[in-house]
Length: 79
Image (cartoon, one colour):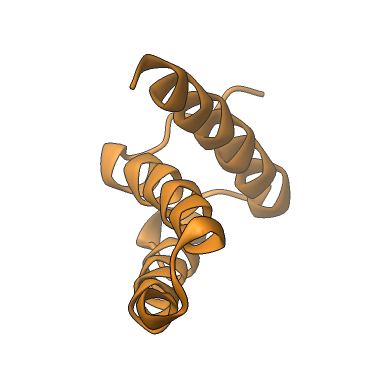
């Protein structure tokens, strides 16, 4: 089933992947800042009100991750 995610939720998951990618390659002095950003994004994604509205939240969460991963990958290739 294709879910219609709020734009902000999808963007938060895309940003999460991008931030994680930057953290992997970042110098040690930048990792704490990037970890804090990951924590904020994780909180935003996890507690979005959207999840309370749908009965199949686990499947929808996986779909969100897959769509965001594809979008992040496309953005990475475009830059």
